[in-house]
Image (cartoon, rainbow, N blue to C red; front, side, top):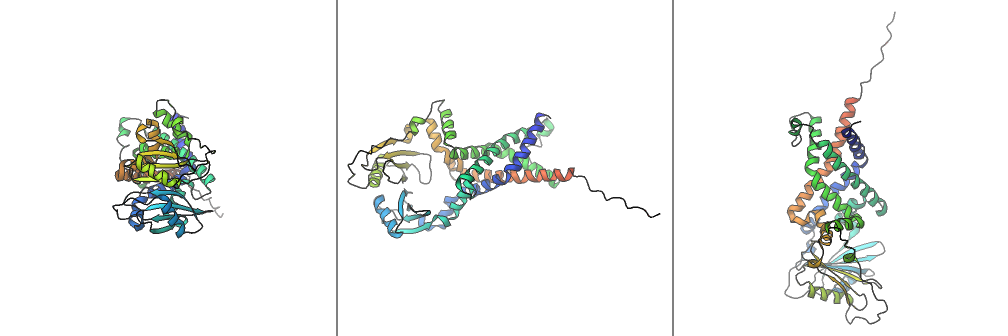
Length: 376
């Protein structure tokens, strides 16, 4: 068996094994790309009028959220931007809600049940196929790994053997037979999508596997590990002095002071023995440019300040990963590219299956009827 035939066999059987999962993950990813734009059009509570006064501190907004949903515990609080509502994440057992509030007045604009949210469902479909997370994550990750191998093996099979074949590898012959059109769509679509589809697949795997993201970041740093940059500060649990103000308010004020140009602020939950995670993002609904802070959960003391400008190239690449995965890094144009590439990726298992099915029918011999005995 030649190398090309061996690659063809590998491409075929891996494609048949992973095709359905790749189709679901790609289509759900294409839908999720424009989640913020669609939410903005359909959810008016996401926007507020900008006022000439500072936003209320997080403890006040959290109290208003709990008043609207008694018995629930607030954790993450997100100041989404000066013209956007602030979101407070509420939970009680397995029930989870987002309370959206006017950051200037504290008015509760909407309490949203995440279980019934369309894009939350799409996200879980994309990440876990709506299966239990441990099982679904494993199935999706294996399928995406196979998809990476498929893209590479597909390029090997696409590579033209001679100059005459080269002319046919870049365009679909629309006036050919249906089988030939399907074959061209599979090969040509796969070629044009391959580079960017690899980016989407690999950045998705980096989200799933921290060790992979760390390896890529180390490579970007020329072999220097980013472990020191990712190290979390230790919390001195012997400190008994308490902050005069709620710790989340102290953290919020400190972030406003040290990152005055940040449009979006994320404040994590306060829990004993663990630092309070806080992040200031340069642009609303964008996650690449970020200043990271950690605060003591009791005293409110600043334990870590890691501004974007002082990060290594590898750490900046890690911060950029989500925006690369969704196309956000290039704004709306990047989202359009990610959407198109996701659709092309979804088409590959379909056209590949149709090509295989057509060949099966071609190679199947027609069934012969037995000759009838002639009466003597």
